[in-house]
Length: 102
Image 1 (spheres, one colour):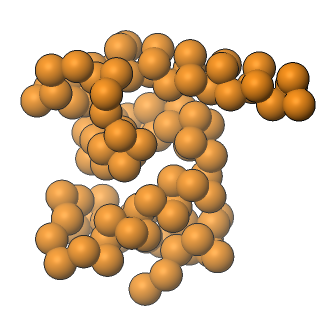
Image 2: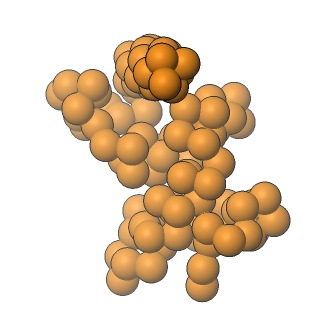
């Protein structure tokens, strides 16, 4: 039980550090600490490099990232560029197939 709490604290610290260090990915947000997991994922997939993407997958977990992505792309309008959308749709189908649905 204590280990879970410690892991959660470390994940939150990693999340906050990532958001602070990569604030330029969310240039339109005044207080990046308040950014949602969905916005963090979207901004990173759209504007980050591969190391940023790996960091977000480590913070959120690949399955949670895939679930968030799946919900985002189901909406009539999303903010992903066509190439980004296609790449990560294929990526999640390969590496987290039960969390991505057409």
